[in-house]
Structure formats: C-alpha cells, structure tokens
Length: 265
Length: 284
Image (cartoon, rainbow over all chains, first blue to last red; front, top):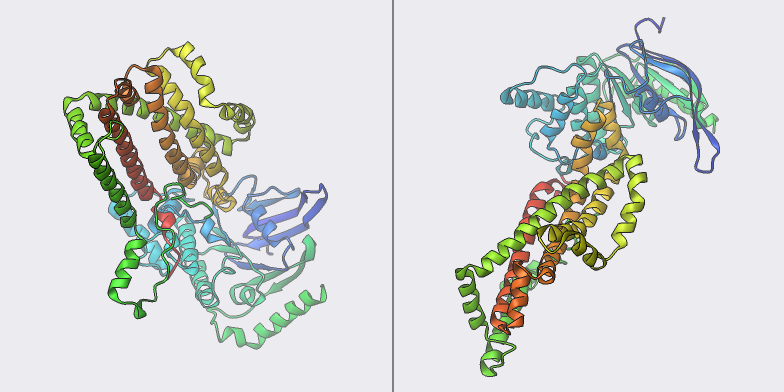
C-alpha cells in the first residue's frame, strides 16, 4: 500500500565504512523502506545510528555498499535532480561571498525545472518573492555573515525552494539554531511543505520535533542496526505549537518512543 | 575563519582597547585615540625626516645631503624624464612577470588542491623548485636568456609564482565539505563547482599569496635592473652610486619606496573590496 505513489524506495540498502584503523564499521545494516509521495517523515535515533547516512545515500552523496535506492522510480547513482538537501551547518552551505539574493539566484540557476532566463527586474521580483515566503523580505542585499543562525537557515530553505525540488532532505537543520527560532522554523517548514506539495525526510535527534512535524516517525536502533520502530503520527493538521504538543496522543507517542530509546541503551 | 586577511600588511590597529569613556576627559580620549591610530606613526616618520633635515643642514656631509636638496633633485629627475623612464621600465617588467606568475600560480596551485592526479604529478617538482634560492638560478638564466627583458621577467615570475601557488593550493584545500556537497546536490558539473564555489572560496587565500608576491616582485625587479645593468630603476640607482651622486641615489630609493607603498595600498583596497563579506560579523 505504501509502495503506491512511493517517492523514495530503499531496498536492502546497507552501508559499511572502513575506519582509519582498517576495521569495517557498519554505518547501516540492511534496510527496506518506502516513503510515500507527499509525506513528511522524520528519522530519529542516537548519534551514530545511521540516520544521516541514510539521508546522504538518498541524496546520492554516498553510494550504498549493498542494495539500491530509487527516487521517483529511478535508481540513485548520482544526486537526483528532484532532490535538495539542507545541511545542519548552514554557514558552510550558503555561499558567504554572495548576498542573500545571490544565494537565492544560485538556487534558481541550478533548479530542477529551470525557467527561461529572466530579465533583471523579473529576477529580483522572483528573488523577493522567495525571500518573503521564508519571512526574509528586505534582506536581499545582506551577506549571510550579517544574519543570525535562524535567518541563515531561512536563506538555505529559500534557496532550496528556488530550485523547485520535489523532495527535501533535511539533516538536523534546526539543531544549531536557538530554541525560539526553532519553533518558528518548524512552522515555516510545515507551511512550505504544504504549499509546495513536497516529500520531506527530516533527520533529528529531538523526538518532540519529529512528532510535531511528521506523518510518520522512524526510530533507528543504535550503531546502524536499522529500523527499530515505525510510528504513524495521526495528529490532526494544521498543528499548533502549544495545542498539538499537549494532546494525549502526542504525549503517548512521545513516551512510547522514549521508552524504546531508553530500553535499548 | 582561521586566516587573517590583513596579516602581513600591518593594517588595522593592534589593540583598540575598550575605553572607559565616562571617566575620561575629552582631551585624554583624544590623546588615546591618536596614539592608537596610524597618525602617530606618520608623525614619527615626519619627525625623523625633520631630524635628518636639521642634522644635515648643521653638519653638511656628502653622504647625507639635506632632504630639501634631495627633493629638488628628485623633482628635476622626474621632470627630465630619466627617472620616469627607468620607473616605467621596471613597472612594465614587474607587471608582466607578476601576471604570468598569477596565472600559473593560481591555475596550478588550485588544481593541485582539487585534482589528485595534478597534485601527485606536480608536488615533487614544486617542492624541489621552491627550495632553490633564486640567486642560484641567476647565472643559469642569464646564460639561457641573456640580460634582456625575458631574463628579468623570468626571474620575477619564478619568485612570484610560489607564494601564489602555495596559497592557491591552501585555498583550494580549504573549501568546506558541506559546500562541495551543496554543489553536488544542486547538480553542478565539476567545472561549474570550481568556478562558482571552489575559486570564490579560495579567493581570500589567493589574494594573500598575490600580496606576498607583490612585495617580492618589486625587490626582484630592482635587483635584476642592477644585475643586468641596462635599464630600470635598479640601474638608475646603481648608476647614481657609481658617479657618487648621492642626491640622485636617494631620489631613486624614495621613488621605489613610494611606488611600493602605493602598489600595496591599491592592492589592499582591491582585496578589501573583493573579500568584504569575510569582514562582516555575525549579529542581529
């Protein structure tokens, strides 16, 4: 049932690394997974559980040691065009020598569906639109270094959206952002997910964040042991930072997951 | 960022200490501001020149003519065109050698930093060559190229290439992994990634190398002029020394100092303009 309209299919994928001492380290043991088109899926787990590894494999930034990954029915052998990736360290992902507008233009220049070259006025209007969408209207001429962490991650989101992706992969995107900005960024992400009909895979170590955002939460076991829990999150949308987080359902799911994490210490 | 873009230029005051403004009088604050600015240093230079003028006027001696007389000769030489011709000759040679060095240094250094096979192929030769003192190569190059322009350009190029190359290499190595992965996820081709991400990321390093090289080139250009003994500002100075014309000798030295200062100042201006984004601090 999940496979119909699946956007991402992970079939028997494993990843092994060779450590500096020459030992083989399991990044991810054999994993099968299907992610439905248009869904918001979060992956949680301890450090080293392989959640970021899986994300890089889907993004085509690494190649699996075994098995295969298909995005939109096509096997991933290089970064798929319909996918954009948001990194945790936005400061090294944004181009610091370009202004905010320049960074958005980078997204437009390297878009999935590239539009015809726009005239200057059109271009700056498009850029201003993209910035307004992430709440950064008027910041076009500033440099990333002049912005706070939260604002920089907004620029990164706008740049990814400018490339018109179908799938957005986010690797702990808000963990380096202060707590207050984090909640507004979460709601911003939910808005763009809905408006652009994206499929989102979101890696985090914050169980509350995963539950608040997602349709489905995947708990990965320690040391690359793979999928430990696959949880449907039937919380109604639109979600609300205060209301949603204090519903019985939210708290029950939260304690279920936490219990499982703590029991596999 | 670990690299200070102004390192080596001595630009930017060393310690702008926090002032406890409330307790200080206006004049004390003014004094403290003066002593932490370059105006203080320029005053010392002016004082040294004044001392020179006073001593040389009170105790006339051929080795140290009064400044006023040197300046008079300097202006004369500039007007007659001899000094200007020599200067332009040196600058032309410098510019050519420097341009070649920049192209070779940036291309080779950057590619060594980004393409393993280029690094593997070039690293031993680069390490061998850069250990060679330029002076050891002079006789050989004169033998091959004579003492004309090509010899001087070759020497300048050799001296200027290595600082640029080594810094371009370091710059190419400094491109963060996340930035390279960003290029991948945005579907950039290898060439696009180098042009849109690699080179701009390496630019601050390249500029540091170019500024180091600029200092070297002028020195080498003057020395080759003396060595070849046919033209340029080096030859101008040497000639003045041989006929014991100390005033003209000083005029030549002052010219080199002024040109060096101006070139460096222009370079800093361009560098600042190009890497403005690095000097912005995080706030808001």
